[in-house]
Length: 277
Ligand SMILES: *[C@@H]1O[C@H](CO)[C@@H](O)[C@H](O)[C@H]1NC(C)=O
Ligand SMILES: *[C@@H]1O[C@H](CO)[C@@H](O)[C@H](O)[C@H]1NC(C)=O
Ligand SMILES: *[C@@H]1O[C@H](CO)[C@@H](O)[C@H](O)[C@H]1NC(C)=O
Ligand SMILES: *[C@@H]1O[C@H](CO)[C@@H](O)[C@H](O)[C@H]1NC(C)=O
Image (cartoon, rainbow, N blue to C red; front, side):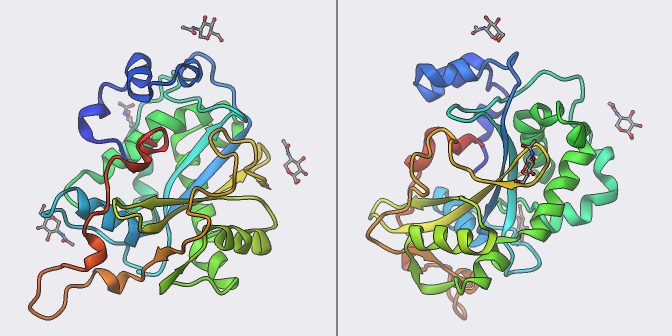
């Protein structure tokens, strides 16, 4: 989820503290301390992102990736174990779209801004400002181009559609227990992931993101130890999370879009910390 625009420009350390309300989070928002342990690679399921976007406002439309069946990149987040961030690290390397010209078509395909009407560049710029600059300390990621290229490499190599598909977890109408999705990732990749759900007001859960982690050699590693993730998933333990196929978004002939499960998909939900990632 991208931060809404009003927060976008003003997310200073103090704004972060106000926003997050939790003192210990503010400590790690100290951007002069840019050390971190792992890279969290977060992929999102575009259909769920679209559902959330439409829920926010009826007139919202989505820009789904051309390849309808893939998961797309949310971001690559350098993270300290047992803590949050760092975020918004200082660097003179401001986001510069010309650096990415050569890979822009691939970014559009794999790092798609689902939220039509908002700027695609702003999505990338936000991720760069908040996370990418913190990754610069690693030689393998010490430029904007390297950072975005790495995400593309992982999006292809570890696309969640493939990873989950290999374990038989595919979009359907029944959905899955978050723990079963986690087990599927573990079975295919061998490492501990984070399976992230969003839940609507009626308590209907949707599979939203799967996060896998890499160490500083850019090799898969367990996500265990990431703050806020005491368990492997925030999905309901006893109730399936929906994993709707993109066709669930298609309006019927001559009808406006009004899938019942679109209604009531919350806002305030996961808003705490990850909401702004
Ligand atoms: C931020 O971090 C630096 C270095 O870790 C420390 O010297 C400074 O006191 C911290 N500032 C705040 C406000 O926590
Ligand atoms: C952005 O990158 C281009 C291409 O490398 C470079 O020519 C230009 O000076 C950069 N702009 C800024 C503001 O750094
Ligand atoms: C995206 O939004 C524009 C208007 O902002 C609209 O013309 C276009 O049809 C939308 N695209 C999709 C795929 O809905
Ligand atoms: C990353 O993980 C690989 C495989 O477990 C290991 O060989 C390598 O030493 C690790 N690198 C770092 C920097 O921890």
